[in-house]
Length: 105
Image 1 (cartoon, helix red, strand yellow):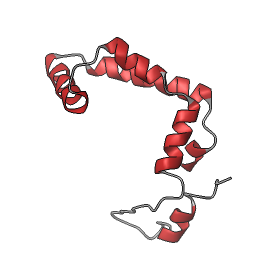
Image 2 (cartoon, one colour; image 1 turned 180 degrees about the vertical axis):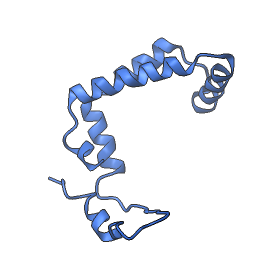
Image 3 (tube, one colour; image 1 turned 45 degrees about the horizontal axis):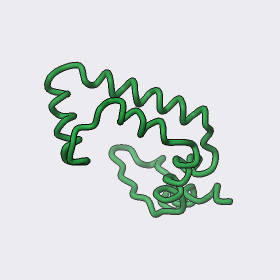
């Protein structure tokens, strides 16, 4: 995850945009998912957005925007660790925490 802060390429972002658009379209295959989508958009935006507007917003995201968001929310931040089952091989908190800033320039 920390790699997103520094080494996100335009090709990766383009691939993610295409995958997100495909996922959004395939999720709307019945009346129930469409109603859920309308409700979610009403709660988030106060209106229903057209697919063209949603795709325009997705297309506006570039590698620099992903890096900026990753730096804001991921890089050098405290983490929460939860484990279940056999945890004898789980690295300790400090080892994991160091990985949130090891790529810092």
